[in-house]
Image (spheres, one colour):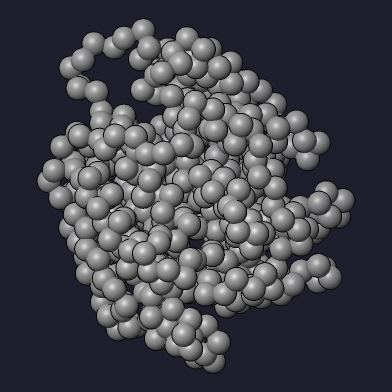
Length: 458
């Protein structure tokens, strides 16, 4: 993936790892699902995917698993009801034309909250002045005109998704390194935020570069685990949980790998989500089925609006229903609540219990539910709501800052840097925590945003 400067390795999130490793969730794939998630959406062309696999690059820096990644991911997505198009080794004009066609197809789909569009990229990537770029085949990272010969992730690829709510566009970026040299950071990405209606999943965190086997018969580490997770879905599972499971499987596979250089360069996948609504893959219960005690217990856990309540309800659910169809979702919620409680215990976060009350606004309620389960992007959106007095909450700059602090402690690097700038302007000493924390998380501020602190590597 793209490149930044990290001051020190970002630690794994132990609570998430602890709970998701339980119950065999990190083991081999389960049975292939026989049905799809959103009713008949999968059967009538409302799930489409474009897979762009670029493996041919100058100077022998090819990505050997690129085509296998495309074949295997295509099969896994088709099992989940996607219509899939695979494009190999595109040059820039063909790359742009392919994304444009996909965008036109997305725009023509019904705006009913059931459509899912997915763009996957395997190839080289880079960042220039804090902006992320995907390199078509035939373009070298060290080419002086590489930026002009590449496609901008934020401004061109993500624009193919209609920016609407509810709706879902998913970009999966598995940009791989061609070298196992630990000092080789060329090809890493910067931290970015997903726009409304989008999820962006990176195969490595900001400042890292994904490691790729030099064998066309193998998948890259990230895509291989994503395929196994997709093929292992049985019951309906939120898409965000699918990427969370993929992240944990990659971390486990690489950190325990028999080859030392793989363990040393183990990547940490990263996901960022705009406001999207809830989308699932896998088999849904028939809509006319009477709710069981298990369904009711799951609903109580899902309705909880405070991290401590989520933790308590999720733990009780797992004890009462050890082999539940909701097992994965509840474990993710439990792990997220643990992360939320840890963030709230920091002296840098000052949110009271009253901050987690619902206003009745559906988008605010959706984000509260996500934020109490450790969603850093939802917490940032709530901060914006208080900053602008929207979604049923009054403008409250103090509460906006509190939510931004919470988002930052959950790992939102842009929230960290935003806080640094505003706190430094006020002379608040907490600025000296949030600034380096943004850099530790891999964020490279665009040059126009850089301050004068010596640790800002702009």
